[in-house]
Amino acid sequence: MAILNILQYPNPRLRTTALPVVMVDKKVKQLLNDMFETMIDAKGIGLAATQVDVHQRVIVMDLSEDNSDPQVFINPEIEVLDEATQPYDEGCLSIPGFYETVERPCHVMISALDGEGIAFKKEAEGLLAVCIQHEIDHLEGKLFVDYLSPLKRQIIRKKMKKK
Ligand code: GNR
Ligand code: NI
Image (cartoon, rainbow, N blue to C red; front, side, top):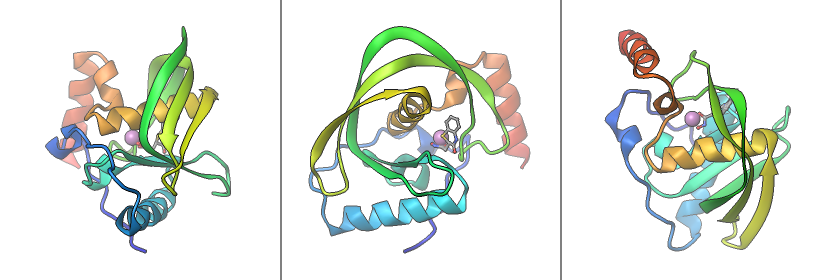
């Protein structure tokens, strides 16, 4: 196990598009373990491989209080089930200290492979729906600040560069 370095905005590597995983082999399982350890250490509820500079479609998540509910999503896709959106104050381990409200569809169907490479589908609402969309955005090189006004994004970018 290892704690991996989390890329910080505005590192251009965060804009890389991840490629699908071809086979869930030992190397991918090692990555999943390292990503869980990194996410827990950073006190996050989710982590996309893009954030640790690995450009494969891999996400880990744990929405429980005590890290008792680990979830893996490999090659995830979502289908929007309801165009209605919900606002949520989002944060990101790649943009620490900044929280802004983002509107996203509130009801989606997730299709993915689990940590053993088995395909599954899961309906998501609430925090799971918010988080999976935030993480899939990372895999496509997108960040929550991209939903903000250019002015707000520029302010966050400048403050992050100062750190
Ligand atoms: O830890 C995280 N919290 C969070 C809060 C609201 C909306 C999304 C998130 S995901 C974030 C971890 C992270 O950066 N994942 O990419
Ligand atoms: Ni994030």
